[in-house]
Image 1: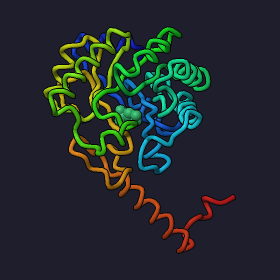
Image 2 (image 1 turned 45 degrees about the vertical axis):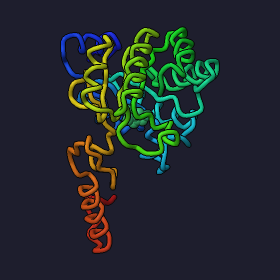
Image 3 (image 1 turned 90 degrees about the horizontal axis):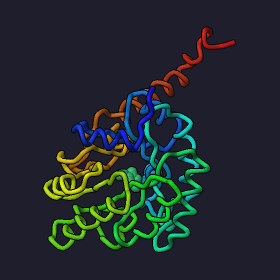
Length: 265
Ligand code: KIV
Ligand code: NA
């Protein structure tokens, strides 16, 4: 199987083929997603919420991100693997940013890193790119800044924030990012960004007029409970399926039906 590269992602945008991206935090799940044919796997810092049960993405550490990334990289044979630089590992310090990115690349074998923000982190992006590490940008709702925003509602509805987002997208492209995630912004604004910059724009809650889509795997599989934002399409109800399987197991154990002779040595 041919591996996905940044070059291929650009070609997909150029010919109008949408890019598919999902999160993965472990070997078993990543293997299923890779074999299903996903283009890009994101070892997102959403692992802080989904894997560790934190309320925000802020607590997850660089060591923990590397641990998640290692399992994902061992599982894949085709997908392009992107790892989030966690909160506190790159903001406002380009030397630290470069060190964090190099640790991720070296210790996990991932293919790229993702950073949240625009002009504020340009210097960090430049340093990481100078080491030959492809950088994915992330604009709009950037969860590492949740305490600045105050809520997880749609961003860039106001003109000033929309203008800053467009200029940040251009800046990220000029700086050398190969793609940008746009999270939870009006569809019209996302369309404008995707038409303005030449690199692929991957949306989550950013409407259909972008070059690809990303979702948190546990949300689209229905494993996550109590998270039903408007942008989420739930493809199955894994909570229900798993609950029924586990209840079947409990019942069989209690009834002394499991294990049978055939399942014993
Ligand atoms: O961490 C994450 O899951 C993300 C996606 C929502 C883009 O950054
Ligand atoms: Na993230």
